Length: 243
Image (cartoon, rainbow, N blue to C red; front, side, top):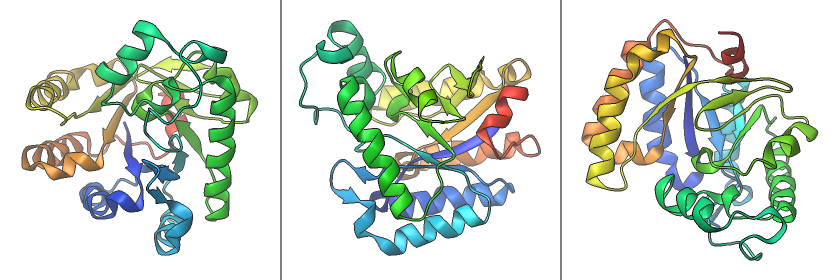
């Protein structure tokens, strides 16, 4: 079982800290999925104290993953279908079903993806952070992004159904909550409860989002899920490939 906290940014500082406290209760160090400039409003480089906090956590054993650049769609300059940019039903599914308009890497061309990867890596390096992996916002990415990540030397990345290494992949269950609507909240709670036994058959990920911390029911569910998984944690994402 691997635990991660998504959308790590000064924008969500309090919520991320609360999620970290829940992880500490069960003795797990979650991976931190850092967004370099959340929604184009929270550039990490303008928050040196938060960057220092992230460096300290990485020194204590937390992995740092690059998590997109803006974590928001609608900031692309290319047209749908241009240079590999998803279009039609693929784009609609990514933005309306998989996310609430936050599937960033399913809204860019190959050229734009290259720029955002370059810029994201630079921001994290400038903050003094080593990059341990990559996770696209909403786990949504076009097929051409996988070889691009491998060419750049990433040893671990993931989507909604698989975890990937430098040359292999493995099916993986992910347990996470959604809170954009009441129906999504209820259905995600039901799924996470019903899907727990599947951990016997698949390497499993627990993904905590800062927005979860805004809802009492999800705070309870996150703590319950972590307590249920106590004693079965791995601290590196890549360890899931050998589970």
